Image (cartoon, rainbow, N blue to C red; front, top):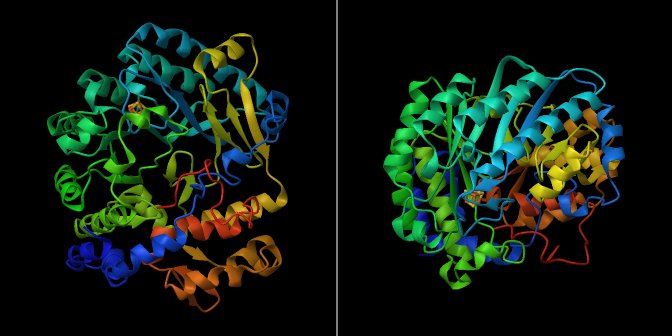
Length: 480
Ligand code: SF4
């Protein structure tokens, strides 16, 4: 099915972004030809491949000393998974040996204490997120231990959020009960796709019953926000097959949905060689799947947020979007603006007001560094004044879908033209193609333009080589 064929499904939508998209759907294949470049996902600015290998532990410690707020977001990376999903490009270790978890957790405890001691004052955790890998690789006792480590070093603020990513295939109801008892109030389930054919191709077979039972248990324990991760662009997906997945998702009614674009990056992830490029939907079909998904989710009452998130109207993420407080970081979209993010564990990325710092990726090497009493900083980046301004512009675009010279001038006491000369020229093709539209002084991304947010954001990226229109071949995934 082509993108324009998908428009017929879109036309049936109840309004919102999807209904407006229907008008432009016939042009999507042509637009993909023009704008499907390799560009960063802009979960950071500058993008991680730009960061400096010379930025090490000393530089990170010096940045930690500059932290001025009293609240933080804490992220813990648990890299272990029992089985390899063949679409995976995450940093993970596949093992059935659960004995690896105890020493890893001990090192997390040590790293948390080192970070706490490197700060100028105590920080409360307003957000505590656990991701992976598969955090449910930890036993109930180990999950409790992890919560205790974070609470000891970064005491939870009243009403703090605690969230965790879970693999439905091997999460037990006992784990859910333990998480609830430890104050976790959000879970994120890796659903990806419900089609048996797609699940087989990606080596991730999981039933609706498994997912439903976890959702029921979490709700029964008062967890107030349940997220499903879904992926479009996986092998053998079609508009019709993904529509069936969405019907089941809508019936289970998660509070949030992250609908990620599959990134085929075989030079980064050998796991993705388990299927052929020819098994993947063509770019036009991939976009058609996305457009149809927007229509179905909007019709089901979800609000489309930023690049790829959806939330029910009373979810905190939707409310943050209404207030203009949505932010984007390595964990996706978040409603907590302006917090320093401290990461624990192998490959963890800390984001401070003035810098990024990433830890050593390989878990044994990371643990060796921590056990020797050193922070395991692999690389990082100190933000220049120019970086901060461009980061704000990219955040504003990715979260509010606008380029607002007035808001920029008010915040930075500088004209946008002075910072990004030639912006109007850069936006001209997007404007001509109906992807952005002028509204007074403000450029607003149109519903059709939401699909091309990454190429639009790249106009603010001072590290892209303007002489390389394909931009970062082999470093970034394609925009679509
Ligand atoms: S997709 Fe998730 S569960 Fe699957 S191998 Fe990757 S990190 Fe592990």
